[in-house]
Image 1 (cartoon, rainbow, N blue to C red):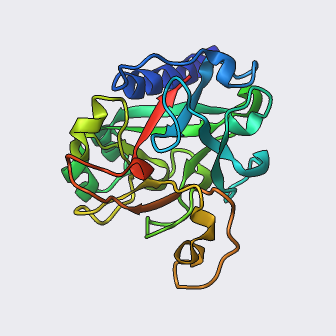
Image 2: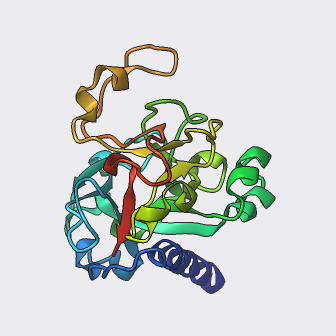
Length: 239
């Protein structure tokens, strides 16, 4: 049991070292999470709506329900709502995930030298084994949901400094899903505050209507070029 706790603590530290190591800016103290989650928690914010000093909106589990398929949304930072308690599950090179059979040879070929992470929902610091990811191989406007950690590429997020070197130095970077099959415009984490009102984002994989979840995070083809990626597809982390 002690070894398991230590392993999970190291995983959380590795995520912050890996993601935070890219971020030169100062980070908030643990008062951006519930007291029970404390230093283990990280906050994932959109560069379009905040900064490391003032993240404003952060990745949050919709209604705080820990179950497979529960959407992840962007909500204001809270010290009392455990729905925003996110911790590091695993961090490493994309090539490490490939060796463990979690990402494809094609993904490894394109991103093998980059870093990747899995992030787990842990309300009040209690791990659920559920990570932010996708239910299917990434497709345009698929919504992020909780999925079992460590099972597939769909919960792996690649810190894509390769496609945004100028913004990476500022601590913001695209997060490409490990299941992407499009490498010219890979499927990256994307957030527009009014995304749920966009008709195109209400369509399912086969074009069937789905009930929209307000402020749900999506994946969309990475836009721009290596010198400019829109803020809606740039992310940062803070404590």
